[in-house]
Image (cartoon, rainbow, N blue to C red; front, top):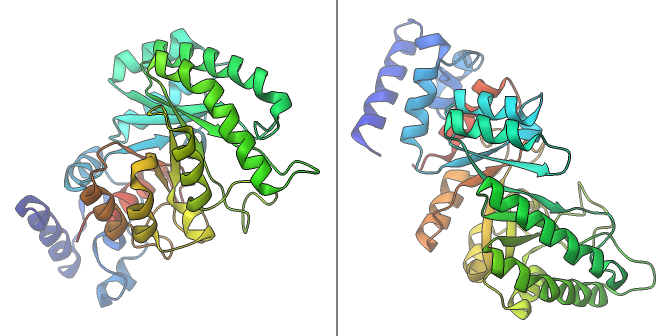
Length: 316
């Protein structure tokens, strides 16, 4: 722990013990472990952290986050970019790119210095695990790459698709391999990474054909392209298989991007069972240096949930 971080926490804890207010009610519950007797009385104090509070927490956290604008904020994409910047974020991600006001988005990015990390290029329907959809898939990858270059965005998510009637899981996975191989030269030419996302079928995406890491790792290794990797969503992986650190070690060569949410609830880290400070330290030790996608729903307001997430993800 850095001296600035230690002094920051000491000051905050001292203010609570003395009965004085933290700046703008800074996250007592985000600063004190849940087992601490002070935490019970401090639990509701995280309401409206100031901009300065958030800056300190971002600086103390060793992980940069790409805020998922779809789940955290409301309004047009360009307005959400500005809101995310005020919360102290430098990066963002979003879902479908079509029907967005590109000029307005670029203006908001220029104004704030925010950078796009990834967006959804191909969703659940129609499934790219059906070869009948491969022609459309390749066409959409090309269009998405062109959009990504305008945004200076390095990655885009690809969804495998739901179960196809009459196909085995292995057949659907082989069709995903075939589709990615068709699109890989386009992604390589544009230097935009396709990141294939395994889901979970226990809680959120029943009927989806790809879940857990082993099959996703096999698929990407067989595609064998530097521009076809995995969108390794730790929330989905926790539900599907657990052993988050061990699985990351086994498949790290195929990880293109990390996303997270806590479980249960798909809320921000600090609300559930996952020890994200440990998991993100493991990712760092393995060599991961990209932002981590915060694809979760805030349990409180965006500022309060940001403070909780940053604190829960700071290495102990």
